[in-house]
Image (tube, rainbow, N blue to C red; front, side, top):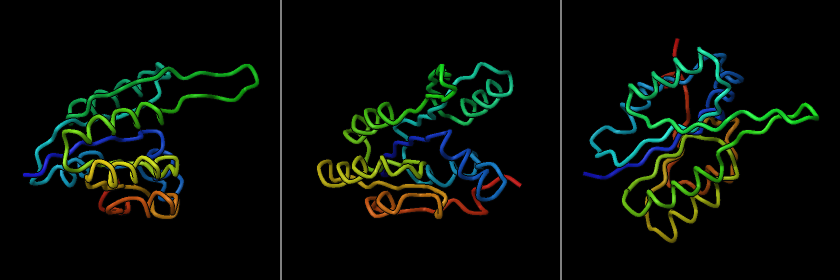
Length: 158
């Protein structure tokens, strides 16, 4: 049985599914699909913490599914812009998990992860599955993945 590690860029999947489909990602359906006939090594959901009740409830749902939720505080800059991404954290965890997993599943359309996917494939000789909204996923990431699984109707909440 293949060992799988799952890393979800929560902000990316939220905004891309909302923008494209006006729907939310179905984490339960995704979990069932990504872990089917596989041994789970670890599953991380990376999110920004704004401290509101609705977000805490959502984070608890993710935990109940089986994710370890990693949070970073939302930072509002004085110029009005905001900061809060997990690219470095996801990259570090993915490289470490690739040492113990056969398959690394990344849920994100962010092209910044193309080098990560390529490195895991080439240097660690592991499979990298990328889930993303097709029209909002960077071509470089799609090409770097061993397999690209588009987020479509089956992976969306009604």
